[in-house]
Image 1 (cartoon, rainbow, N blue to C red):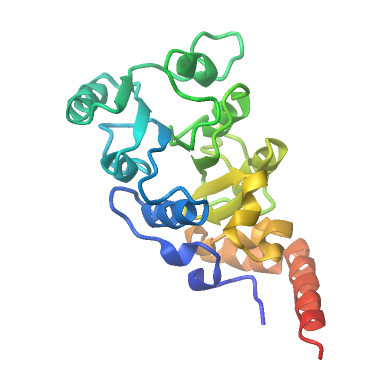
Image 2: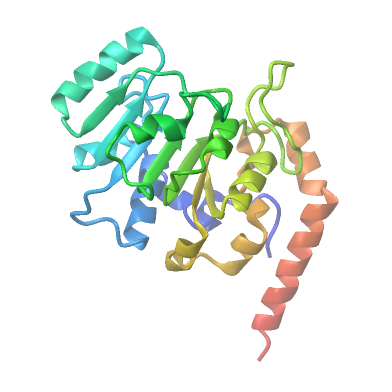
Length: 258
């Protein structure tokens, strides 16, 4: 029987979590995701990550760089950028950029404008966003480039159903629900929650062989161990969650009929 607190091993990709450089198992999730998409053995992909730090620290993409991928790494902090340059000297496929990424469409520092200065294809493979603030607004502002996979940091202490967007008035980070809604509006499907959200382009989703109910009810991918005990209970008892689970149970009963 399905319950709101679904164990990680019962989620389609969380069981593959492991870290090489990542923080919450993203290296393992991406490895499995790329395998299912046919982008694994000898695939020379391309990725973008910001803030990139030194290119390695808690990176969601550096393990791929080590396997031969090319990367555009963007880091604002001057000292971290100096460390990034040292990493890039050892890995010539890294393009390091010291720039503030902005989301005002009139700025010369939007992610689209910055990437125009690189040879990156518009449908490059993987984007990782981790700037601890306006992650969602930056992704929302991205119009020219359409990466196949997006990994974006959220504030996972917000329970599902809450719309929260980072601002200067005290909201730190973006909620699961707000980020999910933007992702869906941009033509992506959610496939995993690790603390970050992992999306793929909707047209690639069937290749992943993920059970349909996770597509229809992506809230089921939410892992609640980042929540307080009180919010875990609230999240479990939310009426919408109970309705979703009821529909899934009904569909499973229908499939199991002789």
